[in-house]
Length: 288
Image 1: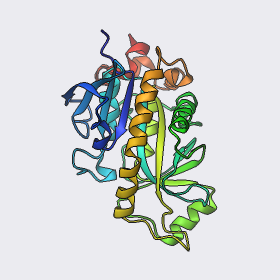
Image 2: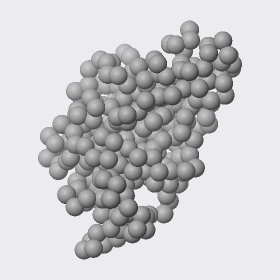
Image 3: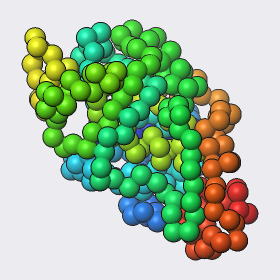
Image 4: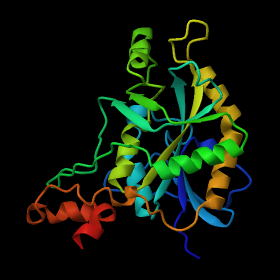
């Protein structure tokens, strides 16, 4: 049996504590960018191999800017993963995206400052084009699956990733609203862009936990509010993931799989051999 995961899920560790997951084993691989956030849990759902990674570590010990995003994506790529579902908490910046609902965003604004954003450098310069930063095919399938679970869900909306770990001030929150942003979170960038560099399909199941701090008639966001809503939505997330896995067939054929095809600008004969070797899982098909 091919043990290559048909889907990887990045989210909280509670996501893979459900009975449908069988044959569980964990691995903790090294990558050129260090260890991933936590051991990767491998198992089977509906007889198909899957992978789960706790973004903030077991016990939520990593702040948003401490997450080793490059190591996480690289480790999943090295396992042969081609599709990633990110399960994330977020705040809503619009009235009609209410707490408890789920949003599958289609745009991303990176407002972080202190994070490594690319696998490339060290003599190999790459310019990907993430005009549509989330995979449209995987996002549509995710939305369709969530709605079957009788969850209130929305397809589309722009998300902004802030540095964190603090929440926003009111002027910040209202400024993002004036920009037309729908959701606010702390982890989707650079994760989504790294997945694109790794030629992986990536979609976000964003769980709305609060109205951030802009809403005049709702309580400001707090850790208690976020955790409470996430716990309530865990069952929906688990059922959605199980249904997604059951319906996935074969390799993805979307444009995400070719994101690097026209992105290399460095002359091949000028690229250090050690850089190509280090990035093997990402670039071997273009240099071998």
